[in-house]
Length: 239
Image (cartoon, rainbow, N blue to C red; front, side, top):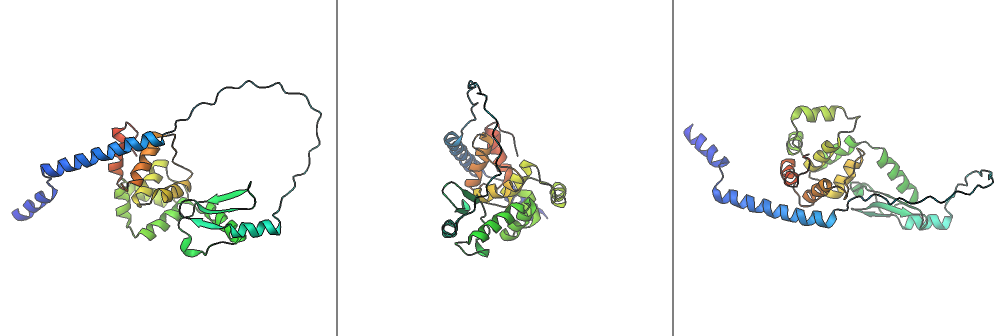
């Protein structure tokens, strides 16, 4: 019994050198985070007020029925040739230079051959937009081969809250919960944006908090408690 307690104490006890090394590592993380924040932060500036020009009275014009533009066979063939897949930008294709459709689908490459046909690209975009958050969440959970306890512990959640979120799969989770679950799945930034967009959220460069979260994901810091330490140092709300 005594040997067991001594072994447990030795396992959990950190030496002064280990503590100092962790402090230096965290200091380096904060310095890089500050640099990344300075480079990426773009605060929203209010649009300057403009004087409205006087509106001239015009004779009423008869409304014309909208004309539905359809791609010509040549344009359609060009669109089929331009169907490509990218891990960051997803499927992109265009009918003309003025009309462009795009969607992030980093998890469908294994199921489809590229380039896509025009009809198949449209079908994929429609299917992707219709799939709810939790469909993608469980898809990533299976791909990464994580267990639920691994996910909710890394996300900083207790079992009860995690179960409550998952059981109500028809309702999107709160923003911070969606971000925390994405981080706990160890998704890269492209996949994280893709997943939280399914819940109706995004990460922007007009928010220092969002930039710091983006930085941590890019640095593969997948523990919400450690991300919260970084947020706290910059006086930002914790996840």
